[in-house]
Length: 213
Image 1: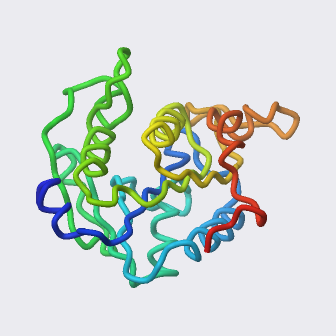
Image 2: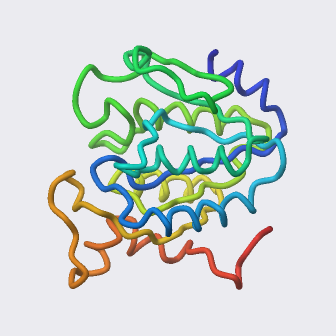
Image 3: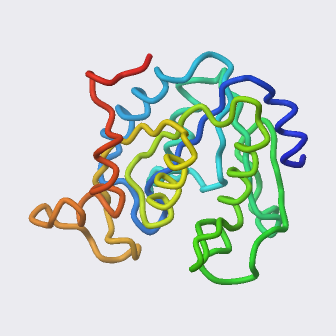
């Protein structure tokens, strides 16, 4: 399916993004991740849409992909839409995904291949696709849930806020320092333990005082 076709399918229905720690960071605590995803699930109305970007669910390497699996188990009514580069077709599609948008709008190599922004701050690849979807929907994207995250997550969070999309941030400790290898330390700074999104994400942090259920 194309972005335009997906936009027609969604119509005026609520649609959400959930972004956060990827494979280079991973979540430090699976139990904390489960409780956070449960909180997120309560803020999503029945039969809503959620955009997923193809991160493989793996409990042994728990990243945002595993968060999506947890959410799908808690809320089988949610309609998950996957946006992914066509090169990844051979990786398959998780069973919880209802519809897929494959696209060829990405560079052959470099950090922008999977998403994010160019040096001139232009969105690329998967990021460009969800921004395009937001602009084609009559009501736009309803909200972005941010569960920790690296540099791309931080950029998407700030860009989404700039476009007027509500942000709901959950500080999540990470396992690695953004390299899949170097472990975080309890004695480390908050930015080291929670990742690049922490400093700016706190202004969007979910609390019981600003809940929107």
